[in-house]
Image 1 (cartoon, rainbow, N blue to C red):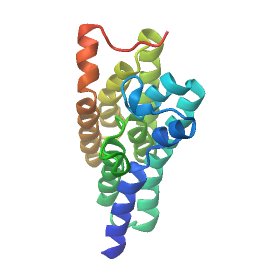
Image 2 (image 1 turned 180 degrees about the vertical axis):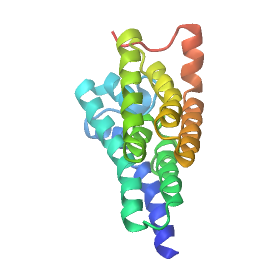
Image 3 (image 1 turned 30 degrees about the vertical axis):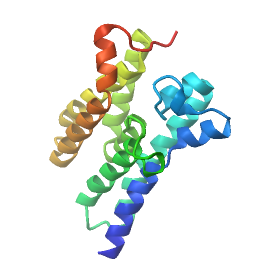
Length: 194
């Protein structure tokens, strides 16, 4: 039981690591004072450029991938804990203890989680994101469409109830995190990459 608790706490703490904030500070930039004030890859792209944004996306995806992977290999008999610890990791990214419980939108970290849990569905959702971005050049719109499509792909490809319910929950969390973006999308004021 102690091991389970430690692993769950570790999942939240790993998710809380603010890669975007750490890198930005090392570059002499306060990411919180730029653009949306978000610590995710999109705002890092505004502040530091696409190369650093890609690195942050990779780091946030990696921590999402590691949590279910480690949970499975350490606690194989506790299958439901994969979902619990993955959720804690994503919430850690959205409400980082190292950033006064502020954080990112959780998109890259969620992608990492599902890259382990449902890899084919995750990759198809990534294609949805990339297609949307290439057409509209709006990251938030691509993220919303990708997260919305994820439960659909899981339902079509696996019919696994646990995965489907978890995907629906994470999709809802991502949409809630994007409420500000939704308002700007509706009014036509959302940031668009040129």
